[in-house]
Image (tube, rainbow, N blue to C red; front, side, top):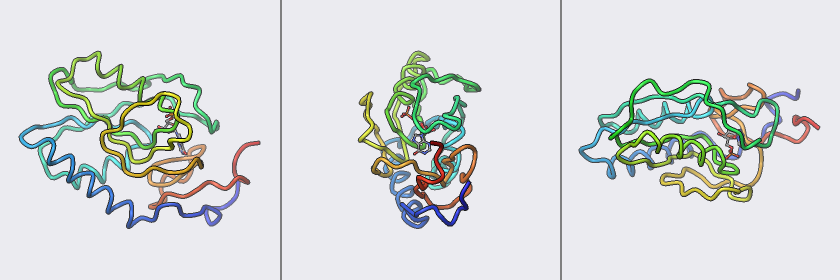
Length: 180
Ligand code: IMP
């Protein structure tokens, strides 16, 4: 596998931090007087979630869902398996689902249906990234960080085969590093 230096920066750290702050301000304005539950989707969303909650500066609760990942595949199978479920009830709560990236939209669509079945007071989706070129299931993203072209991206929590989550920026995985 090629070294980290071959990853091209797509969105630098400062730009991510600025956008996360803007998203947090928008969410804070829309949830005045509420105590939303932020549901992070593991593993990819944990870095984004950590930065987002520290910018929110409002009463909130945090919980996580862990779902099966792509493994070494670069495309989704469309099948989502919940490996670890929420630990707090969300009925009658304002819920914000926090995702790293929306690609085909199948994962977020599945998770929305799953959470709605638990009868929250409201459900919004906050995603750091969206690749609109691959959309199969069009799901509105209420709070979106960036729209990006159709590259496989890593860093800021996103991985390829378990690597690169620790990069503070978002980068493009070079073709040479992908499985044939
Ligand atoms: P979707 O179901 O096709 O929308 O896929 C969403 C999930 O696929 C995300 O939560 C990520 O885990 C993963 N994913 C999609 N594109 C990328 C990428 O470019 N880099 C890393 N993970 C990705």
